Amino acid sequence: MHNNAAEKIEREVGSWPGVTAEPHTRGVGRQFHHGRVELGHLHGDSLADLPFPRKLRDELVAEGQASVHPPLPDSGWVRRSIESLEDVAEIVELFRLNYERARARDERRARRAEGEVRT
Image (cartoon, rainbow, N blue to C red; front, side, top):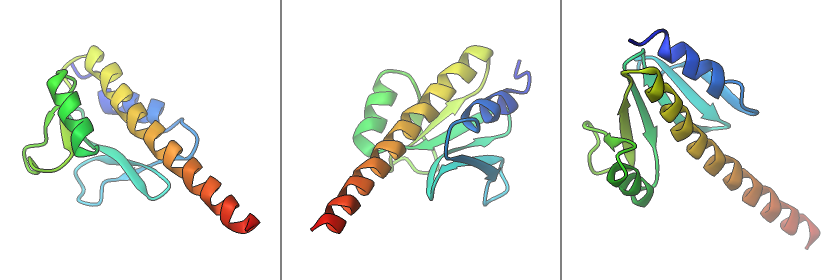
C-alpha cells in the first residue's frame, strides 16, 4: 500500500525553504538537498535512506525509527522501509530532523562569517 508514497514525501520535503529535489546520482530515485548537503534519498515507493552522525543513527535505530543501512553498516546512514501511510509521516519526520540540522549548521556558519567581517 504505497499510494505514491514517494510523491507524498517529495511534495512535503520539497516544499521546505531551501530544499531541492532531483534524480539521485545513481539513478535509484529522488534525492533531497539543502544547499550542498544531502538530506537523504528515496528508492521509489519502497525505501528511504538518510545520513546522520553515527551517534544519532544509533539513537534512531535503538528507538526503532530506522534501521542500519545495509550497504554502509559502519556509517551514520539509516534505512527506512515504506510500507504504509504511517511510514510516510515518520519518514518525513526523519527528513525534517536532517533539515533542521542543516539549517542550524547554515546559521552557525553565517554567524561566524558575520563575526569575521566585524573584526
